[in-house]
Image (tube, rainbow, N blue to C red):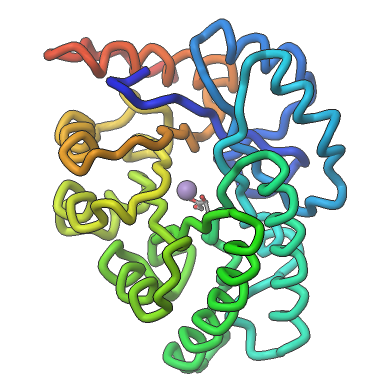
Length: 283
Ligand code: LER
Ligand code: MN
């Protein structure tokens, strides 16, 4: 653990073009490695929850003492174009229907549901205000369904090269406040925040108790310690706001998944030292 924070690693149930969630071929071996490395959880990226053998998979995770703190949903956009902001109401309805499936799975597993890439992109010449209004409408509906199931939603600010709306914590918080649902909070991803936030620490302090989840990756989206981010002030900010949630590694599986899993666990152990020891990045 880095301080008091439980550690998770983001993995994908199915292969996807989204590269920072590795698709696993040998689940038992991978879970055994995570357990041995000291992880407490697996964050699962799920394109279609109806294709997941929910009970069997949860039992498998439990066998290795691993929880599922969060479900990723972005593959439904990346692979199928489902989007909460799409001008076509049929596409938005399909996105909401898909996310209802994620809510069901999350309720069973005690996970929160991530709203990241599933907000989609603007088409050429499309009005951002209209897209934001459609996003707000979808989120409002989803938040009611989530509350009925006791599930929380984590709205993730993402960088400008991946989405057109909500790049910063401030922008995401403004929408959350407008919606007025207790069950929607912020997912802070250091990879995106490094691109978009003027100060990552200030953004975390601003999120405060609304911070529900954290994705950790270094500046180059490799495991922490293999880029040039200084995580010490970020961990200090997390402690300052009393964050009690997970640190989830959403990193590129390079030079291999095994190496990335090992590096994150090693980094997390050293991050509690006053002077973290740098570990050389393999090429
Ligand atoms: C996308 O870059 C990302 O960070 C994911 O967590 C979004 O669903
Ligand atoms: Mn992320």
